[in-house]
Image 1 (cartoon, helix red, strand yellow):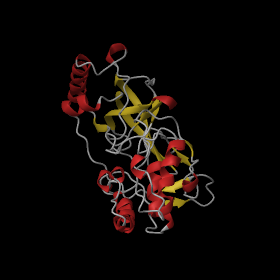
Image 2 (spheres, one colour; image 1 turned 60 degrees about the horizontal axis):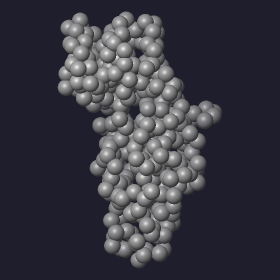
Image 3 (spheres, rainbow, N blue to C red; image 1 turned 180 degrees about the vertical axis):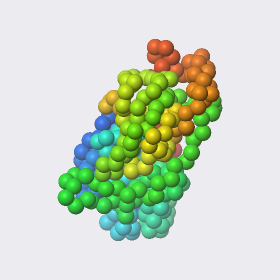
Image 4 (tube, one colour; image 1 turned 60 degrees about the vertical axis):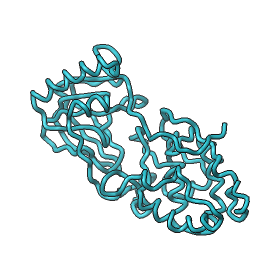
Length: 307
């Protein structure tokens, strides 16, 4: 396949193997040779293309070596590595950060003409439309990564702005998202270390929990970036709905989570919604507590997988 493109060594690109999506393990060192020079050394599998191991990702990325050799875009290598070996932080392992849509568009603008020259198009699985825009989500770009001097392995990642898409607490949202935990809590402080932000809260009431134990005490809510999304203010009391990192026994506050100022009426609504959720069969565990986790990623692309 793509035999008319010997210089680019892209034969067989449409048959790249892709493992089915699944729940990933912890962060792991980057072992993909092409990506080792980039300014992050930890990644997470499955990647954004659903390769279950770095070995599978290496085989897939080999198809792009010729295209990289044409120097069609200075953003191509960064974009490919952000997709095949996405950055992962030790303190957050729920979902790796995606590259910004603008990075994809720059890489595509420079390299698609080379592909078109040989009667081929930009791969559907690398579609730019599926990626977050800087002012509507968390994403990573080359200009956003700065290695902090004297900070060892700590990377200061300046994400392309920090704007959260608000999620309102409604029955429809609650049933759809099936949060792992719901708590009433007072925010003590918000701590920032490198590009990780942690909200320290005092738990007043536990309305729902799953596999991670939640004490009626001070607990940390971990994020996936330098953004606290949804935002929290110190000394305010909230009802917070979010997910958990089961492997590290941590509560997560990530985009899609809900944080609203505490109201007794809202607390009663949540209890009714959770009863309905259990009746629908989505909630599992003792006392109706859910042990499900948020689903990562979108459906697989139209590329045929090779076993």
